[in-house]
Length: 390
Image (cartoon, rainbow, N blue to C red; front, side, top):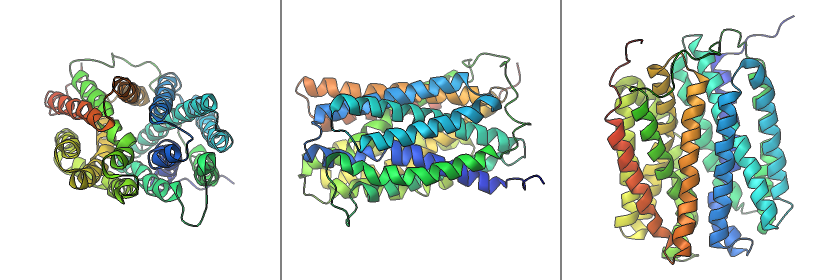
């Protein structure tokens, strides 16, 4: 007796669960942990920037792997393998205070994150498209919003007295059951009607898609600086005991939770291109708020606006890219995420260079603001309607 077919909502929930695991518990728990790890003496501020860079390098490598591994047969192996790597790297982080080991583990964690963040939404989008339910695809990113809230709670749980490497334990333990369930559901998807384009008929970059790629490149650099360093900036500007050191991340995480649903809905009502223009404008305003307003006002406003918008850029760009080149599917998604990962990698490296030259960490946000203005400009050059087939 064959198992009952998976419903679209169950498939979306499983994909959201896996994004929660690798992005919320894997990548972004580092942001609320960062000031605690520095205070514990595990890291210096410069080492923290290096650790972020290695994680983003792994993310880029994972996205590049996903460009090559995109057939159903490859995904059946690659997704469980990436989830296993995530869980092992998280467990490893609980066991070492050696900086070289931390670099290797965050690199491995980034690799698993990049693979899952490309492969799972792409698989889901194609599976939903084959069933005329592609409008649900953006809801998978609700898992990222949920993961940010959970990561904020797990970074410093009030009932546990954790220190240094021990601080990774809550996220590592929660990752295990969530990864198993999400992988089990996706393994049961009937994907025989999806992901059939093994030889893309045209280039990824053409006059229709190139502006979208350029805009997305700026978005990767623009959002990652506040997403990585906002609590640390609050600590530097307001003092380590100020409530905003922890509350800035909580504000951002709470704002993120409904944002996938909101931008998914706005994309349906306004069109993905128009919604993306509004999205990049909001992200730019968020970074300028942190730069130009007093820290006690600008930092929470930055957290609120960035949390409300950055996920929207991801889901809208993925869907708009598929509209511009519907025959590319997962390959286009992987290329976009790889570019996003590359510019994310540049941001903490540039922050480190600035710090070594005697600069202050809050001033690195000017780079993010400029990048988001770049993104907004290039989005205006993206075609307003689906191009004719060439």
